[in-house]
Length: 551
Image (tube, rainbow, N blue to C red):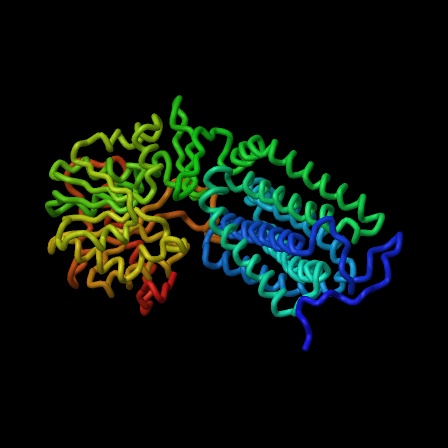
């Protein structure tokens, strides 16, 4: 029977120019027990840093490229694949495990720590080039995922070799100890990213700080505990490499503020006035004062601006409130207050409930001079009641027949994060909240460039017991602006917004306008917009559900 903690057999003493044999214990400055503990602590720290790099890439992809499910799948699958290749490659490095681990941690800290800044720079300054570089940011994302995965994959085999050099034990026990430290570190990194690094340091500085922790932990372990296991050359090259990485990360952190401002100007223009990350999203405001046009960006996606903003919101709100009494109105989304401004123009409205998941956007809509002026200070109206909550959850709690009109001013259905807000279950809840004579209006994305998604929303409304009437309005803005989820190849097509006006039952509601004269919309134009939308009809599409999204 083999004693799992028996000391390793004696080996030849180390040479003066190379590392000791990989089969024997390493002379340590501490006892074997504390030495093993320090290796496990280093594995814990490195695992936490590795998961932060992973989450940082996923977050960047979701914010800047869009379609969070697809991007997360690409990042995670590429990283896991690369980790397997990195583990195999590390087998050739076991004889020089200490030097190899120090080099891997320095490289990982440099690549992972600078990845967010490099990706943001490519997105900001080259994302609008188009042509052969249209997929450039996504290709660079895959390249970083591959490189980081290779380096993370090499960590565990090298740490396993180091822990066995301190004191031999059975392979199962060593794997259990090391994987326990690895998994607990991943938990800490996974919690630290959304609750500490992202809100307090931001994506750029958070990644640089993680790289700093990574290189310090790896360097301290190798140079402090396994220095005698290093060759003469490695004893000065590894500290020099670690100090160089620390210098690069520190310099990048010192310049992060200026870099972020310059990159933001490259994305949004030089007139950025407000840029904040709330608990839910990044909110950027440009212009809005001194006669400059106001533009609002949510996670990089532009909201309608200028004359287009009035055109969009008049088309969204007034067909739903015309032709029937609408005293009780529910607005889902629309935290900027622009849809609310149009609702309050109807004198019969007695109560408006606004459900916006981002309280930071509501604070801006109340107090920012440009945005508050644009929405006509609508939030100061006593008829308005605001709830910061998820629209789906709010509808689940709404009483039956509580509203005469529901206005869904929500993100495009092509954005994965909002898919549940265009599902059959969501519309079923909306139908229950509507009075028998009520109306639901939905922004369903562009008709011309994404007709399949638009008519999938219509099919989903019908499956939920609502009869939809389609219409669209054209935008005067020739460009899509900054941000993710832009339609490829759509530059030559007219940009429009598609809407669906729906009522309970099987009879679609008519498109009509009454009341005050609108500045961008009239009955003739609305009727023509309805005919234009019907010409794009895509029959036979299935409904979208929570478990089977179709967008």
